[in-house]
Length: 266
Image (cartoon, rainbow, N blue to C red):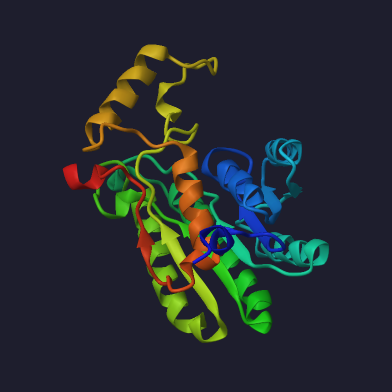
């Protein structure tokens, strides 16, 4: 066995949505560190460019592209650029997502449309675009990001949860449809991971962090884990690297949970 070779992504190409920050940025960095050429996509072009700078400073190869995952043409162009720049697409990581707080009975149609457009349609478009180029080459790994909320429904997270549950079902169905072409499809259901996305409630009106609220939030999340831990973006990124690599060649159609055991306590 050659463990290093199994995880090596040298010569492969990865496209990552939501690469400007959080799990998306960490995923792009981790894939590049494993040897992949990475196209970093985000509606926040400045953030995506900063991610590319971090990768190139570390000796990796990456490019940035502004793209809106709710726009199918943008997603198609994003995947096409990966192929044009690097010759192929081996890994598609559909990480981009948005919060959707509020109780179901009080949700507006605009809130519903936004959650579906970004969290579900964005992943759907990413899957379609990836299959289009992976099928002719006879290989590829698609990795979607769901959420641990699918295992533990909670008040005020209904819109978010239902879109993430749909991502999990999309993943399982697509894996059955494209396995014959050598394409693997998996999804992550991350546990509480400290990013700007999860700590959005601890910011003051001026954009500064309320340290007291932040500490209380982190401590609360630690208590949910039997390990007494709260996740970092790298915890999800490392799992994505595994699913992208040949080490996971027998893995498809699954929901993967890096969550510190949090859902066992819910």
